[in-house]
Length: 525
Image (tube, rainbow, N blue to C red; front, side, top):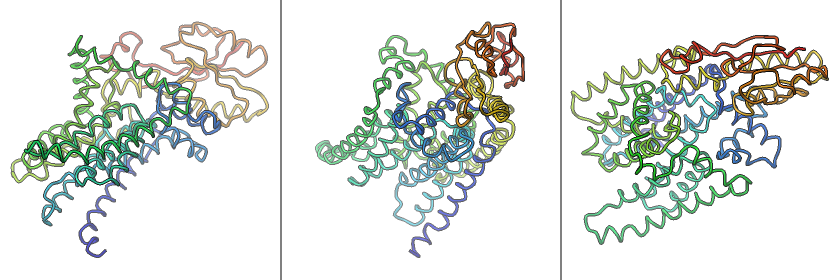
């Protein structure tokens, strides 16, 4: 034990320091960003699933895997703010991913027989982990109640144990790998990329110039690979217990073109999506990350070629495939590939070329400065943060952003306390998503308050809300200004909630004005 402490004591303490720092900056003002459309849906599903045992597979109805909601439903009843606990799960997922980055970086290091090489491997791993924890790309999504941080966690650990499995040809590691891959497949469909790429690890760790020996050496690793696939496949098929299992493949078709699309139009949407990808790295990476990755590749290609191929496979292949056939392509869809970039970037620490070391230190300083600045704004004033156009639009500017929803729910709760026996009806645009799910997650335990969707393109007060007023029921309507086509007749504006200013270069700015608002009306006679 004394020997282990001497070898690992300082490393563990530094790693704990990095993790504590990462937790603190993620925990501060965790709900400062307004609820996002998918967050509202996932949290609402978790509430329904917690209250109704027969609906444990509710996410399948929309083609979504249920693991994130399964975890959330056990915790959500114990917190007054459902969005907070949903985001807190992502915070912990991100921290476990950080430990995975450290572990993968260390286990991929070669020639650790000497004490000096062991120290270099540990420093490289700590360096990668620190950059990962600080990156605004990771920081942003680790503070959202979305499934992507959890997917990243299971993917990085699946790769860690895949490396251990095929480096050592051990069954126990294969069993753990299968379980982790199974959890990833229960989190999001993108786990399929990890399953497909695991054989790359198998082949690289069994390469042999003698073809006969190479083939013979593959027998046991292939059996271990079979174990991994069988366990993960069985876990994935647990979802067949739900009535909506078939929706998983149907909904995937809504987001992806068929493979044949590559032969019809190989560069569209590949090139536009790759441009988007690099813009995300440059803005949220931030940009020094890209240069550190290039230096890491240069520093490691002679000494760590096999390991670099593995890291590049998991970092690049999913991005290229999603870019080539993805109908929808956003930054969070590639989040699970980003941790591997930080492991590559960490390799620059191993270079013995003084000039490269000096350049890398300068890049690290720039990385820290830009990351801290962006993270500070994300913590205090997200509208000032540097975000890609699509992410700023979705999370801050348009109907998917939920500014005012929590405030409206507090208003409704106050009205409800005046006479808890009287019913209150709230009509909202749409039938699911930011509205009405965003209101329902906050009004879950408020009796006699009914939130109903009234569709889109509202030109006048729906008859159902008029009848509600006629019956003497306190009735409200919540709708985004950009989606309200009426004159305001029969409505009394209680308050409007301004969203972030639109990007002047966007089409929405030109067509719908400088900003959108969430309008909170009372329906009157």
